[in-house]
Length: 277
Image (cartoon, rainbow, N blue to C red; front, side):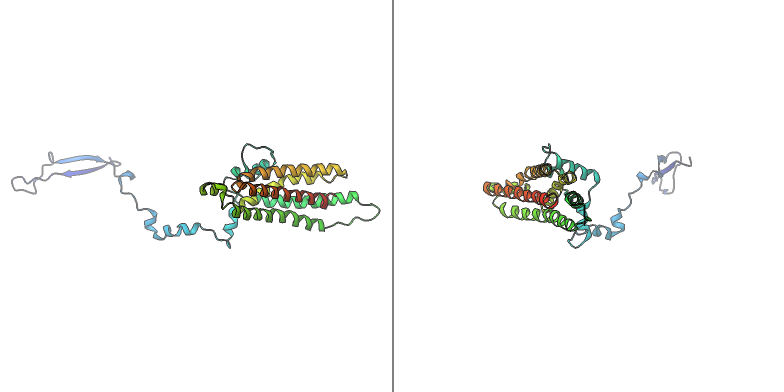
């Protein structure tokens, strides 16, 4: 009885003019009630009513990221190791089942491209130094050529950073016509500058194994390794860029693809003759 509540309904009748007359046996009705059940109580006020300023502090303006804030750049490094390794593997497969832009899924990152480029720079310096040591005369002390390091940094970082920007600008300029397509289809196939950076950045992953094995004193073998690296990375770029460049006119799209392959061939030639001559 202590844990069970009751509510009482009293029926007061105006019987014979006596408003105070009640018959406890007939007019009192007892109904079981559960006052201890929280569901029967009125719901509490929502937090927004207790703190009127909370709703305004989480408005759409707070989700904006500005160019001069760290949060703007942090969004391009918000990726886990599993995603980076999956993207690296996809860049090495000659004929994957899924487009690399679909693998990015609207979340391109700069974490993988940065560390891939940095790894390529240091491996090129290391293996280029080994190649020079094997080709040098051992009667004199070997002197390290640190210009290889600055040359590798300028070549890899410059190519990975500037060429995608140029391609993005060209696509923005020439895709205005859309080759007779609807505007919605052109916008759907458009590619952002960060996606271009990610595409070129992950295309460099093939140069890590190539640089590791291209220090051999056998010249034709080094040519073969660099040619394989060029073929894999150029195929990766053209396969993923063709749906994007095809939004332009047919002649322009062919010129863009030839330009992409030509610049990539220039990178491969520079790697061969600057580091493994």
